[in-house]
Amino acid sequence: GQAEEACPEVLDWKGDLVEELTAAVEAQERTIEAAMAQESAGVRDNLFSAPIYQAECQRVRFALTAYVRGRLRKIVRGAGHLVADDAALARLSPREHDFCRTFLDLCAKHHKAAFLRNLPPAIADDDASSESRCPPQLARAISRPPALDNFVFARVTSDLGEVLLDENTNTAAYLAKDDVHILQYATVRPLVAKGDLELF
Image (cartoon, rainbow, N blue to C red; front, side, top):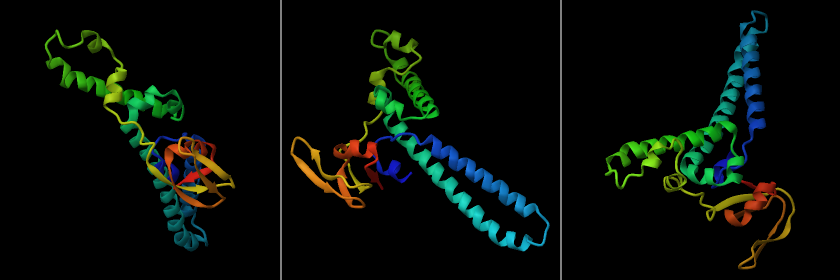
């Protein structure tokens, strides 16, 4: 969640982790409800500990929704650039992929309804009005590419030694495990993808 929020582009979908955490929270909530429903000598203990477990479940649910909400925010902001990049599309979950396409199609319909229908027929493109998909030019025009030149905080997860960050300027840095650096995302993008750097 924290790496996703710190990264200027959409990272790989952590579907297994999300499903695992959701299942664990649901199981814990069922356990709490069952313990509270019991009428035994240990009820007093349950009354004290149940709110603590419930708060922890709520905290995990909040973290999961923040993770998904952050990803959706990035998808909305850069939808046109995501659909134009197969590698970026592959990082989305199937539901996020559908959301991205639907969002762009709705934007195209709104564009046509709000703008193109008011143009004279000679200027308005009749072929475009019959299309149900968002044209690529419009998709890129209504979205922003990820700001890969932004600087990010990164923690080194393993000893990497001297690493060439920018071939053009021959900029290198010594990256030792647990070091924290502020680096330009574009230069460390491959290291983040491999897991050698962790954003926060």
